[in-house]
Length: 159
Image: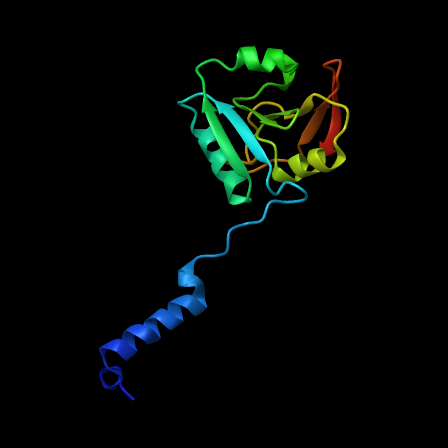
């Protein structure tokens, strides 16, 4: 039967059925890894940082609920939360009692949340190419650090 023989209403219903079956070309929203479902991560960033925006997009793309707070100066937050200067990056996040410094992958955030160590948080210092939200290709393994309650940073997770 030709399309003309289907009639306007039949054609519309047929197209609607195809769109429903194919999902309109979109995929289902990502589910957060581990036990992160329902948790909100707050990202503190400067208003002009493009890679910070990409990191927020990355987190949301992995199903996390993200609240963004823009501030011109993040240094007071980093100091208040005990993040050593050597661990600093362009943005800082909080999930529960933990600081998440830099372009940290969701796998590390999920591990932090699942293990709930006695720590101030975790960090991926600097702005390494190929890390979540950063352009470029990763040139080798990266090390995530656990920030102990005394402020000392210890290698915690290779990535």
